[in-house]
Length: 414
Image 1 (spheres, rainbow, N blue to C red):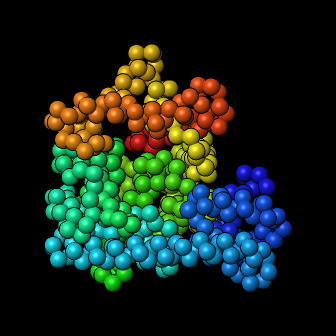
Image 2 (cartoon, rainbow, N blue to C red):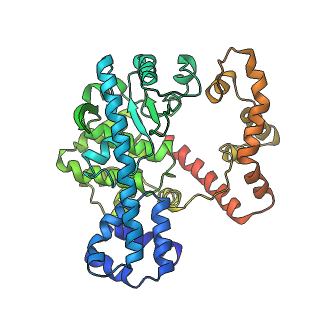
Image 3 (tube, rainbow, N blue to C red):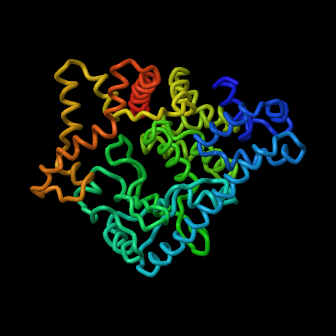
């Protein structure tokens, strides 16, 4: 079974077709083809969803017992991990309530329980919460009291000027906590109405505690920006499936006129319309006529949609490539290319303070530049070597990164 057939079958299993239509496509799969499908689902983070969709076929004898047992075990593991995550989140929410700090629960921790209605179906790696910018320092102290810590303390001039979140905070085997103050990236060409987002936030139930979550329209807009511009569609199918579930869960409650208006006000129309177009194409979701008209009016180039699709379905290689490579390739002239490389090897004091446990005004910063070089060599040296020696897989990954950067630039244009 080829790559395209694999992804098509996985999309069919994730809801593009109903169970009766799926059956002919899976019942004749060999053990090797089943394993390819399972590994593809794992790379996209959707094994629990695949298990849920194939349960009825298993009861009819359409799936080998060994494969179904593997899927079932992954589903149970996901539920176990998420149960521990929710236990930690309950403790965090209580601590923030006691400290009088408002908190918005975003992404997986809200979606798994309130939208998916089964916490096993939506895998999560960390806890994402949104605080007001003025509450970040107190929020960090609150998490520290619970035993969470990062490799250095919060630095207002470093962690808020160029980044939308604090450094991840960890505690033993508990899920890491990512504290955001902005839904996007401060350097992105969008103008999110952060105060309006807080005013429109809704009360929801997360585990045993009440919390705030984004209103449906803001949630949809945020996830579209998150999938497209922030992650360049390299997040795989799971985060796009989140959007599908939101569309089905809220249904007529979503105010599409508000979506269109807010996307224009925020300057993220391309992010929103391209992402919704892909969700429609990948999962067979029917969008309202006014959204379809807006997508058409935006003049969606088929090549842009194809590039985004390729970013989604292509599983990244195992060899790491430096994020600066697309910028180096696109820069004109040797001097411009060397300037990009030097900027990555010798970042500013503020950037160094984000990477290492030091303050930006510390004289120790100069001692960390050799450490920076060593880290770059360890992380990307093998990939650079493979690229220059003509390794096909690495070259393909590099070309994909370049196309992805071109896509990001298109998304950021008004």
